[in-house]
Amino acid sequence: MYNQLERRNCHFACRFHFKKYNNSILGKLNYFLHMVKASYALATSRLFIIDDFYFPIYVIKPRKGTDIVQLWHAAGAFKKFGLSTINKSFGPSEDYLRHVKIHSNYSKVYVSSKTVIPHYAEAFDMSKEKIYPLGVPRTDFFFNNDIKEEITKKFNVDFSQFKHKKLILYAPTFRGRSHYQEKFTSPIDISKFKAMLGHDYALIIHLHPYMRSGLYIEEKDKDFAFQVEGQFTIEELLILADVLITDYSSVIFDYSLLCRPIVFFSTDLEEYIKERDFYFDFLTCIPGPLFTEIESLAKWLKEGQYDMKLVSDFRNFFFDDLDGKASERIVNHMLMDNPSNINT
Image (cartoon, rainbow, N blue to C red):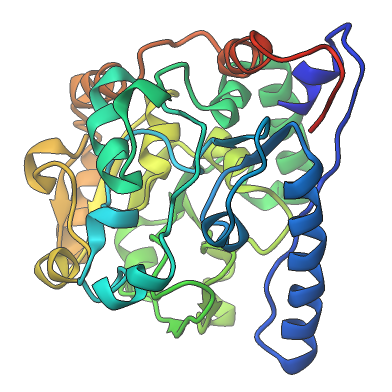
């Protein structure tokens, strides 16, 4: 988005307010100061652009002339979020909503396809007319072939021991509420998985940034599995992976753009539905098989009989445009009715 804005001939200033929450006393103080700065930006900006839940927006009356733009951080519509989760253990209570109207005050929301507009309208309690299916900026990355080559070269240098192996990316979904997380324990027995797959495979493990890792990989298994913690972004890992394993993560939308195999491994589907639920029937919607024990998962991976039509149908349902120009379309639309001098 920023690169697109930089290419325009209008005069504007972009300010960035990024902050990762730290649950210590000092972290909370720093976050409070961040909120003060964000509130000033809200009061002075022509465009205020976010991609997630952002508390200050929901407790103010926006200044006339300010557009608050929600890009959301996940493509498609998979797990329920926002007001779709009222009174579920994952979501807000009706009592809380009487004090804080979450996901309110958005001027525009941009989504990946027309089919998901009703779900975002429900989640944000807003008019469908303010939700535009122009794409998800982050997905432009997957259409850049030069970047793909650079990432592959970097990986082959940094992890040369995995250069000729089939890369399996395990990316489980975000668990818990907000920034408060329990330690993640992998339901996949890594030693057993290695023994079943053999030496032709490598397992890359990537956790959500707010998930606390309790993952331990034994020394004897480090020639097979490794956890990525900062060396590569999740987008870069998706580019590298030959196969994606997840439970309920929305990275399936991004990965579907690459038209590669996706498989689901989960032992708590019924509990997750009670906790959060989905916008579509999980078992008929997902673009790959679901396994609950690793023997069947390993067998499926080794046989390689992947139904790629499931993936392409899934991609075509949740994306109206497959051209890598979502950022360009959104910036054109955002600036269409805006004056040439803006503060973003």
